[in-house]
Length: 162
Image (tube, rainbow, N blue to C red):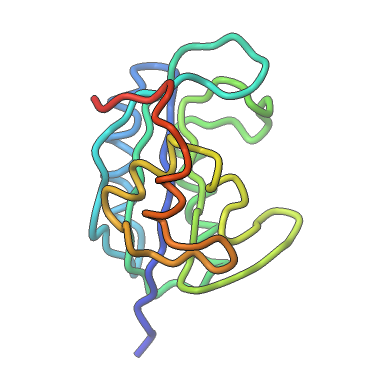
């Protein structure tokens, strides 16, 4: 019997009815093989990061329990992004129909060319920390700290509950 491991996924969109895109992505995460969607945060609106002028985002975080190994889960997330309309080649910091970021997986610490865990952008991204704190405030992110503590260090500027 495979072990159940917690994983947290950031979900974001700012194109083609972003709220509907995020809700659809959360629904599809619940359908991943050997995986259960246990928790989903409130939806948040946020201003875009980076130098490119683009529409505001809708963001959420999903809390999963999965029996998939890390590589298999990561591959499923990439496949799901493609199925939901994200092109294989896309502009960094650019607008997107859907973005699924694996934020953490069990207590893994990993640095690789395609995947770093926990996700290195978590500490400065209120659009990740606030929804993550909604569902897992006590989560300890290896090398980064507890979610509630990290969320307490960033302002809610440019972020709003939907």
